[in-house]
Length: 216
Image (spheres, rainbow, N blue to C red):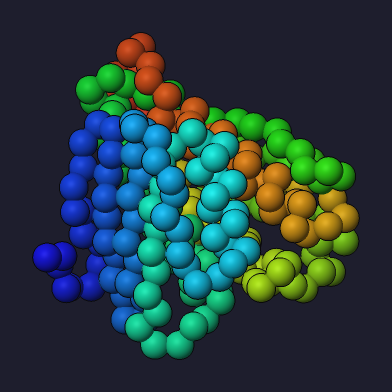
């Protein structure tokens, strides 16, 4: 039985797996991220493109991911994308906390990824500072839809991830003409960054992505 109160509830957490539930008046999100025992992903947000992007993050990050979303009121694209990003960030942050004091983790990641004509750079640093900086070329700024969501909804996904992970996230779409390819490259790069953030590093036991040593 999970907690029915609003907010974030930790269902279970250890060094290799974390399971969370997040309730708002609009949505209920249940997520799990694990690093061991490769299994099939279970992703269902109600948005096909967002599900596809989460699968890209999972595959690039080499982790198992479960994400289930229930809309308690109306199906609002922006809210679904932003809150899914927040949940993914919450999962990474909670696993980061489990690992940093036991085995140490890198705490930051950087990746450049491509998808056909698109090339995207993503940087993530977990330092307790929730910042997001997203640069798009004009052709994407002028675009509206990408499959069944909007470009600005995918921006909200990355902004939500930064908020949930208490991380600084930079996304630079260096070149692209197809928004699908741009966001797919971005999500591949995000997965790489998450893998690096959580990568074991005994030199950094008890540390975060910056030298202040605490997320607070």
